[in-house]
Amino acid sequence: MAAAAGSDMFDEIVMAEERFHGEGYQEGYAEGSHVGVVEGRRYGSLHGAKIGSEIGCYLGFALTWQCLLQNCTDEKNSKKIKALDSLIGMIQKFPYEDPTYDKLQEDLEKIRGKFKQVCSMLNIQSDFRMGTERSSLTF
Amino acid sequence: GRGLGGARFGWGLVWVGRGLGRGGACRSVPVSPGAGWSCRAVLGEGHQRTVRRVAWSPCGSFLASASFDATTCIWKRQEDGFECVTTLEGHENEVKSVAWAPSGTLLATCSRDKSVWVWEVDEEEEYECVSVLNSHTQDVKHVVWHPNQELLASASYDDTVKLYQEEEDDWVCCATLEGHESTVWSVAFDRSGERLASCSDDKTVRIWRRYEPGNQEGVSCSGNDPTWKCICTLSGYHSRTIYDVSWCHLTGALATACGDDAIRVFEESASSEPHQPTFVLAAHCCCCVGTGTLHCSASVRRTSVEAEPSRKNRPRVSFSRHMSLMARAVLPVSFLE
Image (cartoon, rainbow over all chains, first blue to last red; front, side, top):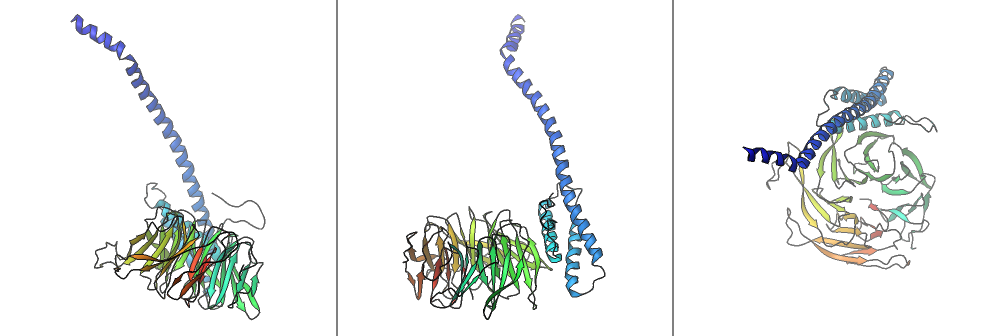
């Protein structure tokens, strides 16, 4: 009995450092995870907003031009209208609610490419830079 | 220097019949037809920065020049010279290459902005962008068209070659060729278009072959799309980055331009098999650098190599249509087929 109690006590002292190390690690890990989640959420929110802002901009731009060209029926404009329709279609199909969509980046790049093509056809600078103004639209 | 004077150093050289068109770091595009290589025209005031590549249209009436100023100019041959008829804008930064499709109605450009643009030209000589392809993840160095189909290939700093074609009214990337361990600088199709050669900073040349679904060699394809498989790697021949490769459509020889200032010509060996080809080094010539002396001759059948002193460590190589001259340049080259 005395031997058992004795070994426990020494055990506690001898293993103290290792135990504190372990407890400290657990505490640190928990705190780090928590901070990480907060930071991640903030980053995700910002990044999501950026993408939303970019796509929203393209959509507004495309819908406006679709409206402006709706009464033009000549062949020249039909290609522009087709490209605009294609851009709007791509944006509307884009899955906003699913950040784990495996083709997210790929589809985003396709939308950007189509937007640039539309700008080229409409003779508009894709960064909406007008004249020699320094500032241009970036996301 | 002999015939190609006027600029600090050249970036591009193209053949048209017996004439040469050239891009240069001095921003203008001298055009020099004639056996004596005298400068017949200087296409100035088109670009604000280095002209990186030039390409003749299949009909020979137009010259496209791609520049670091992010634009591509289209020059039309007139009686008394050339006139810039259109400037293609859209790329965000340096345009690295431009190429005409064999049909003459399509043009492709690629840039450091990682994108490849496909343009269409109609009978009224109006150019329109039909696609902006963002498949590469890094700087795109070179674009080239298939010899008889509307299939486009691009080479990039992201170590891959990508192929594009039109599917349902839109251009898509239909294949990605992975295997090189570093930047792919250039690609060239063979005469049939069934094989593609790519050269890289990893000092190898790779030969790829197209396999259709249901092929007899058992190469797996996904869906209805053909697959491109690397069937040969030429390694150990080059000691530096290989900047350009050209596949002669008359003899099937492969020429490479390397950063060690040498041109090498490879020929397919007699025992070469279609699905496992072997190439042998048929000619190797080194050029003297910097002193301005011009010498270099190698001959492969009826081809002889002519060289210009290399002031920029980026040699290029190409076969002329008539096989009477293969120009070696410090310059990218292309030729009128």
